Structures are given as C-alpha cells and as structure tokens.
Length: 349
Image 1 (tube, rainbow, N blue to C red):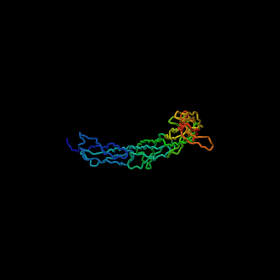
Image 2: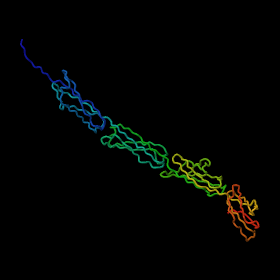
Image 3: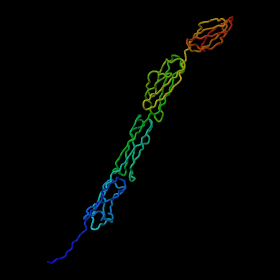
Image 4: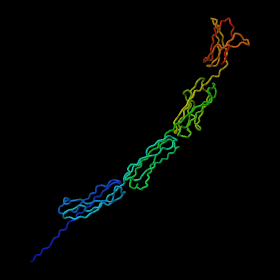
C-alpha cells in the first residue's frame, strides 16, 4: 500500500457585523452608532476582535423625518481566523414637538383689539416657522371671553417634521366706564310744582356706543319709584311731592353688562308758597308792652311793620323779621308804651 500526502485548507469563518437600529427626533444630534457581531466558532467570543467597524449615515441634524441607512464598513476591525460580512442598520428620525401658545389679552368694551401675540417653543434647525393669532371678537363685541386661536405659517414646508400642540389663549372684554349727568327742570321750585329730573348716561372713551339699561332715581337717599329705562341714553322722572327745603336728588345708572355703573346728584331746593299773613291776636301785657300774634305759611319769612297813624302820607316801619313756625304762627312783642297808638301788619318780604 502506498500513501500520498494532501493538503487541508482551513479558511476563515465569517462574522456577521450588523449595525444596531437607532432613533432620534427631528433636529437632534445623531446618536452614537453601534454594531453587534455574530457567527463565532470554537467557543470564541468578542475577545478575538480588535478595532472598530466604520458606521456612518447620510442623516444629519437637519435631516427631515424618515428612515436612513446606517452603513457598516470594515474600518479598523480585524479578527484572526474570521472574515466579515456586513448588514446595514436603520436610523429612524421621528417628529419633534412644537408647542404654540397664544398669550392671554384683555381690553375694555368698545376698545380696539390689542395686538395678539404668542410663543412658539420647539423650532429646530432655524426653520422659518411663525404664527398668526386671531379672535372672533371685534371692537363692538360685548363683555365676555373670546378664544385667541394660533395658526402656523410655514413657508419652508417644515411642519411635517413636527407634532403640533396648539394652546388657545383668551381675550377678556371687561366693562367700559360710563358717566351720568343729572339736571333739574326747575331749581329752586315752589312747593307742589312739577319738577322733572333728567339723567343722561354717556360712554367714556374708547367706548363709543350709547349705554343702555336703566337709571334709579333717589330723593334724600330713598328710592323714588322703579328704575327708569334709558332711551338713547336718557331717562327722566317727574314729581310734585318734594318737601319744602333742601333735598338731595340722585340718579344711579344700573349697568347693562357692557358699562360700569355711574351716578350724579344735585341739591333741589323747594320753596314754600308764601301766603298773605294775618294778625290773629293782640294782647296788652301788664308791663305796657303789646304782643301781636300772626298767622302765615309754615317756615316762611315775614316782615312785621308798624305805624302810629293811618294817614296816607305816613309809611310803615319795619320792626321785626320773623320765620313762621310749623303751625304757621309767630308773635311780635312791642315794648312801646301803651299810651301810644300803634298799628301792626305783616308782609312777605
């Protein structure tokens, strides 16, 4: 038997180097790329490897949302007894979050709308994204709460890279100021006269509409009748029942919901109708003086006059000024000696 030698060729085994899947959000820096190896034989482990594979991707910080290959190349990687095959991985870029918030605003009724503003948080890569803000409220909208809605403006068509979170704001319209002016048709007036008070309610800028609603009239702090509805901003009330003397008359505008209330007042003077007085009693006192009692209008002022004879050429002398009491009476005491003749009368000044 003859023997012939031959050759056993041992070729390198193949390690498969696979790029690990990675993810990030739009605008973020690429993560560190990694890879794993499989296919070891004879109980070998990763200790047989040296160097690092080359892992690259075409994705950059500004790449849009999508899937990008992570390419594996040999780089400095080596392993005794092994060759390599490479499997690319995937870098998935997800949407970033964009938060758009409209700022709260306020104004008084009748004022022009303020400039509507807001904030945008989360813009990446200096994308040219802005926002406009709008509300349904107008200059004449009534008091209340109105939403402020943001709308994104995207000239660079970048919004597909974002998850959009919108937060509406609120425009609060508050009551405007009003002004009330009260006038009297007759002041001072005589007792029993029909006096009309007129309350005129106007708006205070920037509001320009005429207030509606009603006005409550008061006399000396007490409500006088029910509230009077305004017509073109004017309300009036008439009465004949004011007492003689000084009266405080007030008018309070009752808000219609768009205007704040306001008020005004005046001093209404009511004079008594002075009756012609008369002498009702004459008494000669024990000391020789004379007391004369008169009757006239309660609270009215009178002059007492005297004279010593009734000759036409003889005039009357003013001897006293008196205020009639609550019963209309008052007295005058004349200390002139009784042996003189005296005539008396009272007149309204």
